[in-house]
Image (cartoon, rainbow, N blue to C red; front, side, top):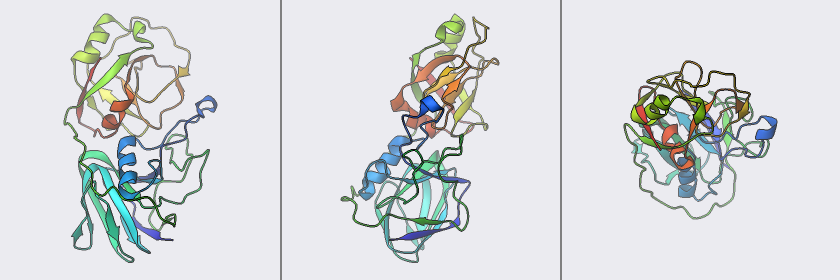
Length: 282
């Protein structure tokens, strides 16, 4: 059994898996990794099941001291990572020895990096998941200096070794399906949704991306009763600036949803940084 001491946690490092699906009817979001494909890849690289608990960093990563041998892999946002004088490459399974310190730097491309360890992180499950939910507070707290993580013992499956890094565009194109409330908006708003770029604002987080661009005007200004929400929903408050919901989104909301980003594009959205631009296409 290997333990890991958190020397420095980074700006926001949380434990994530694939989330706690199936509880929306009692107000619990799915949560889990914002970039689910990067989490899956990191776990495959070290021989874990794809949903094993791993670390999700934001902007920059932690410094970790290992109390035993471990195998790890970093995926997602590109970072400079080192163990002593050794460079830890991205998208590659790497062996770590007892007493060594992993230092994960700032993201150069993308926003969130995933660090998976062979065996996965041993943490109590809440409603079947180890995920940290920043909206409801369910799951373990974000990493703090002095925390001790424990890895599951035993053998994982065979390591996948090295994987090709995913491409990250400076201005990605996200595919959307209109509705369910596109009829609440003017024809001009529908046109502008796909014709004009939007900019990610600093008020964004794991709950969602607040976007800035041409306002999306409503044709219907009535109050909408709260209704169910899904990851990728594009809500539009009264001011007309959309919010693209991510992993920790609320399960219901009263702002009309003009469109929904397709699930396969959500990992791209999860890696967008404040100030970055994006476009939507039907």
